[in-house]
Length: 392
Ligand SMILES: *Cc1c(COP(=O)(O)O)cnc(C)c1O
Image 1: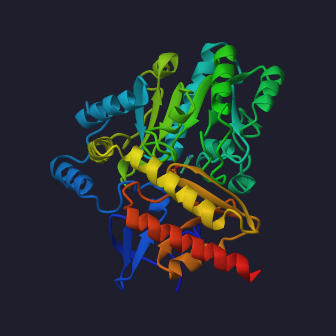
Image 2: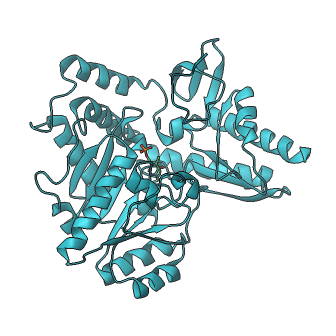
Image 3: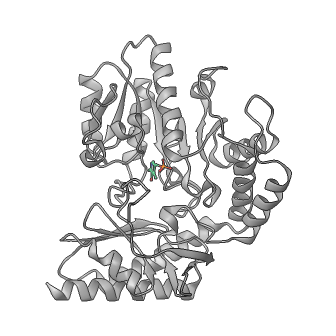
């Protein structure tokens, strides 16, 4: 049979029909514990009643108007998000990549305003920023770029977590205007930088007049045990991008900014047909209500600590386990060999997990995971890893 969908994904042999909390169900009624949340999207779990209610009510009233008109839900969401993040203004898009596109455009405007003809944004090795032309160029993974040349100009790359390399770039490259970095790298293998890294980047940005632009598309909104990952490091960005968990699955992205960066766009300089429409904003407002009401980032911190300790106790001393790391409910178990096969084995065992950077088992469970579900996730993953390492 001819496949009508373009061949962009290696899909697992399962299709889900519905979900509830931390669980997904297939058509045969088999249930799966979700250790991935649709890649850090469904932080409130599946079919969350408050989000479902908000989406239904809004859909029954008004789905879309246009950014040609005022949008009350968008204004309220902007207020809530900027207050939570310590930012001043928001631009709404429909995805993570689009949120980063807005940030990249801000950096270029910032550069030109300062008289820099070819503004350069410093990005990191191993980073992931999306699949549009500018964001795949910013991404530090050749596989994401291969075949899509020519890439976009105006990016320079340094190793992640290496302040000295950034200082060297500052000396050698005169046209740098911004740094774009994930506080904890997600797709790159759950890479947590040294504690003094982001404060050091912040200080260098201040000294050089660069914008610090943090991609918190994966780490933002409670995932790492604080509302935003930068709050672990005392490094407030000038520009902050969000997406994944913001709508709990309803597509929405946001680019927040403060200070001069918040004033760079003017009418006509950027836009989006769908961005920040009433439906998406209603979903995001419900997400923020639930997240703040339940202080879910605190739950992520507690559960994350417990899981990290559990994994270290069970797996930490095994030959073949290189590292166990993470922040909050963003956890990586790095093995000494490629372990992509674990994803299918987990599926067979009724568990949804992910492997990224070839050797890192990555867990991004819903922040609403119960104690018992956390125990099941820990047990399931430990068994899979132990069996896998015993085979070879
Ligand atoms: C997922 C992700 C993106 C891209 O988001 P899309 O919605 O897929 O465009 C960008 N940056 C980071 C850090 C991500 O995890």
